[in-house]
Each structure stands twice: as C-alpha cells, then as structure tokens.
Image 1 (tube, rainbow, N blue to C red):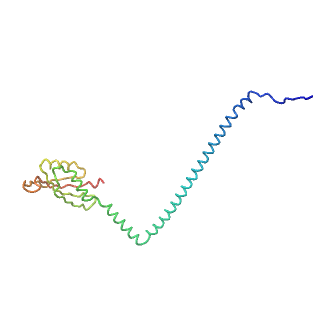
Image 2: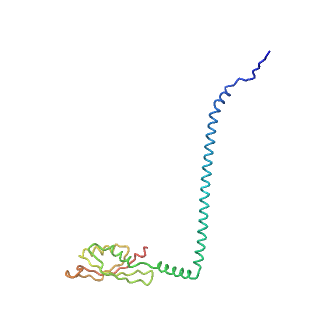
Image 3: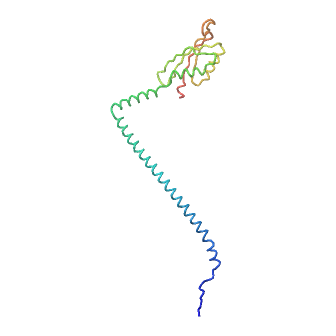
Amino acid sequence: MKISVNLATMSSPRDRYALAWALPLTLAGAIGLVMLSYAAVRNYREYEKMRKQISALSLQKEHLFNKENVLKKELERPQEKTVYRKVQYVNGLIEKKRFSLTQVTESVNKLLPPTVRLSSMALTHAKEATESTQVRFIVVGKSEEALEAFLSNLEESPDFQEFTVSTQGFRHSDAPGAGVTISCMASYVGHRAE
C-alpha cells in the first residue's frame, strides 16, 4: 500500500501579493541599475574631459610663466632699463600735459553759431598749474546778432571764464570775409574738468 503525503502549505494572501509585485519591482530595479550605470559612465567621461582641460591649462600656465621669466630677464638688461626709464619719462610728460591746442579749438568751435567763424586764436600758457591759460581769439560774423549769440554761448560755457571783449569793428562789404569782427580774451578752464 502506498501512502502519499502532501507537504505543501497553503499560500497566504501576503505571499500571493509579494509574488505579484516581485516581477514589476525586479524590472524597476533593473531599469534603475541601468540608469545609474549610464549616469556613472557619463560622469566619468566628463571627469576625464575636465581633467584633460585642467592639465592643458596647467601646461599653458607653465609655458606663459616661462615666457614671462624670459621677458623679465630681457628687461633687466642695461639697454632695456634705459629704454624703460625714457618711456617712463615721456609718459610722465604726457601725464603733466594739461590740454592741447586742438581741445581749445574744439571748445571754441562748439560755441560758434553757423554765421560766425574763427579768424585767429592765440594762447598764453600759465606758468603754474593753478593759473588758467589765457585764450585770445578773433571771430568774424555776418551780423551783430550772430556775434551776440557767440558771446552768450561763451558766457554760458563751462570751459571758459572771465571773458572780455577788447575790440569790435566792421569789415567792408567788398573785402573777403566781410562782416562784424570782435577780439576776445578768456580764461580756458576746460582742462581742469578732465
């Protein structure tokens, strides 16, 4: 006689629930593992790229440092020191330069109405930096109103102070450049604002 024994246990609802979720969780874990592996590989590649760039930059820095040392040695030669001193002297003179004739002429031209022209201009340089430079100019206008507009512009200009009109006259109509002329003197202070 044959006796059969059934050793199987009855599965509980918890076991069936775990079995049902085992496959999706395994699949999600595998996908997560693939994504983490991909991110690790990508990060490693970026790390290697940055490492190569940093090594290239450090080589470039070293090359520039060596080049700088070579140039410093060249500048320490006696001939180069002489040139360097001369350049410093010239730069010092340029720094001390307060203004140029073109700046003064430009300042005067801004004040001229369309019917007035600058006939001549002269500068008397100040001996000390605190003194202002005197500018003497002669202007010719087609009418007295045009010259009055120029004088008004001169009075309102921040570049000039203490202006005086020394002479006023008329040029004959048959002469070239006919019209009214005035001779003025003013202190140029435009270089102080720079």
